[in-house]
Length: 445
Figure 1: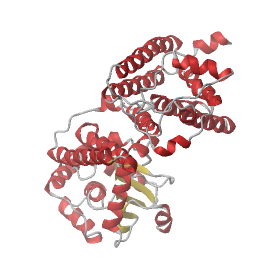
Figure 2 (figure 1 turned 30 degrees about the horizontal axis):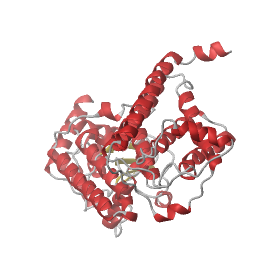
Figure 3 (figure 1 turned 135 degrees about the vertical axis):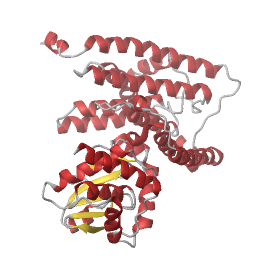
Figure 4 (figure 1 turned 60 degrees about the horizontal axis):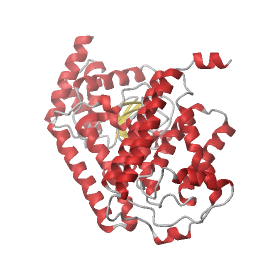
């Protein structure tokens, strides 16, 4: 039975990765510890209220169990692809964390009380290779986030998943109750873990590092510059003010990720699936940006109807909430937004496009084809994006010009859509892309 279990899994590949990961961790982590000891002064970052956190020696047990989950994780799946992606997440977390430890060393400022009994053995073993340095971001927390995402895919029984969630929380909380880390190390470590999960998706899609394609569109670079400046300002303010302002590091990371999407990752960087739902890591990493995008959409459209009927059974508007969708008769939804999710409803589709950027003609043809496929279902269709002004309007115009009755010219198709929603904004570059898209669609037909 054991032989059959091993035969079904790439255990040699997993063992090779573990052979690399183990020495890599201890060598780089140890180097960062040594480096900190050579500094004349190593600062700490702690809040006064942290002195009220109790020291519970017994929590060293869940603290240490992360090592078991780490080693076993590589041997539990049958796919070489998943083993490689998971290992790359672990390598990336270690590399980034150790780089931070070397560039900005911090130390834990509370001395640990004496420990007796069974926990003493584990504390002594930990002190054998760990010093009161290597603080922010907590590599322990980053690895816990990565391992949690890994095991939640493998554990299916409801009771087992509940146990897994509780134990993952205990592992994370133990960094405080064993007096190994200050509070600031936890959110920074969690953010690092989320970045690694975002960067290396386990699903069989192109990983972001491989999806990188440097943008040639000046508009994308212009927008990337705005987001990069916003990220820098948030980070500078967080470091200058300190205290609660340190939470601005999250918006800084969020805006930096959006800038990278515009520079190279494209719409893929938002990790929107075909149903218009984002991967959880993208939702959290981009949370501050998404909140700002949602607020912006509300400010622009609050006095407008959520959608308007352009043709019988075809609606155009912004992304609806569940209540608006139900009030419209539960039409099929097609979103062109890469940054805002659709409500989780049946039949929803998404062809993600970057905001404020003219997409490639092939992308517009794809959107028109999806509209046509949804129309053939016999249900009404609601085409939407953040505002319902550009991306969704262009997709609907493209459909009218290629699949509509009499296949009218682009100018006539735009006039039809604009009569229903006068607010649409299509600059000359959009017209050029639509011209190419509709010409290509007619050629294929």
